[in-house]
Image (cartoon, rainbow, N blue to C red; front, side, top):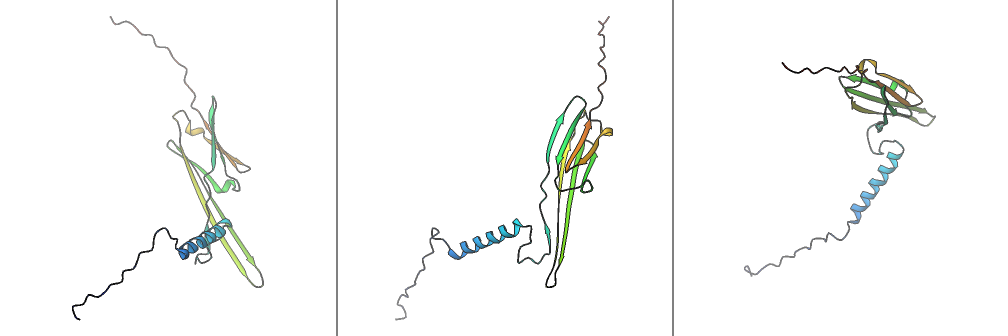
Length: 165
């Protein structure tokens, strides 16, 4: 009997076509929690963090040109002129902004403190025809306007070509 073969029961691997009900339930629940918490700018329920980083989208920018200048117009709704910066380094124009919000609520049974922040950055390489000394920016009603004057063109001088002797 010592030499008798021992039957080995082989398990059948689950087919990949059959769904794993617990995994799909977990995935769906994670998606629902992410959708719920993200929609309201809240931190996820089980996160130990108390501050939230929210995405500030890069501003939509329109660039127009006329004889005298280029004009760059950026929409930054909900921001103030103190939250937006414009800088020029060499031939690169940089627009940056940062939005910070804080909210605090006190009630007899609860205390809520939320902080959220976000930033954006856009850069543009300027053509050689822009006069960097005369660049100006203004801000009104959530719209940033940057005027990029062109360098004054020198009058074209015709040079006479003489025949060589």
